[in-house]
Image: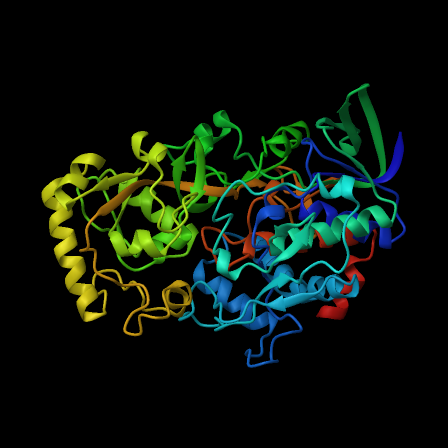
Length: 528
């Protein structure tokens, strides 16, 4: 068959690209490997780090500009090369445009109040306003398609439940990510976008070095789909492929530690057909997780909350437990080179367990099956807890004494936990001296093993500021664009703000569609 644009992947970026392409008059086909729509975004908080957005400067939020955001990004990590610098500049000047486009598509956005950038003390950082989320849906999806939205498997999926914007689908609560996907899907279907589920792309169609379409595995057999305008890869990274993880990510690693999507490296395989360049393959959107019943669960709430601390096998603390997820995962791997910290151990007392959710277990619960399986360890004393976790007993007792002294003073002079506005935002507001510090000294004590999980890989195909896929010689592959997890991140090893990965995916998808429509130069000139 023939169409104008083929989009591989039905996540938020792919759906946004589909709607944008239809608004520009193109015929669009979206092919999705799985039976669901929305990928990891559909059951997430849907946060979008969009500097310079139109809501900044209102309601007590600071004003912002693309130049300030670019300075902040480059201050976190210097761009690796001119191409990376160009992509960051394109992101910072286009993020507000994409936010405006979403609003013009009647997808309401709101500021996540009080949420600062991840490094709030850095030059160019903002105290709040850059992170947005979708408002509750304005209408309900068709029941058949509503049932195809990816559903949550995680009690913390994927962040702080108290900060999720709630919507509704068939009586079940939707996260803000679900609201965003639901609205994009409704607009895609309403505008005539064709979506094939359970239809994986098996290879690119290539003629004379140019991508002309894709081959798709359908129930009735292989289908060759020719794309007159081009192909956009929005099919994510390789977090679900054990061999690719072992080959590229730091070790140890496991598919079971990921709370990301079901992405199997299709973009990398497609890129190999056209000699595409690859970059950042050792990076992921790290986030500490625990394992329960074979699945990974974020511990974002639990590791920040007072009355808990994270230690290595020697029983020693080694980083600020309230760090943003990407940095926390990096710390775990870096420390593991000298002292085993994969897994690490989250040690909690009675107050922590009573007041805060822990992965899949609600606050105050004592799941017998988890305790019997050794996934959650309960002990009357810290000595017994150390034995149950196989942690050095003297080291853990010494760390607890030192930590409790810091908590009593309200200042973590070792790792500065609770000092930054980021830490304070996620801490317990009832603890005025330091919302992230509380002594670990009330029986019984609890412990879980913590692993450097991820919400998806961050490396992939090298793209330029137009989202065109580049060959190893630096030339663009005609007819092929990529975005999000299919492409190498433009942020290096940094996490600039909550929702940066999703925002970058949307911006890259938007710019790719505008470029294949031959209109990007006009837009960039207007933004200059």
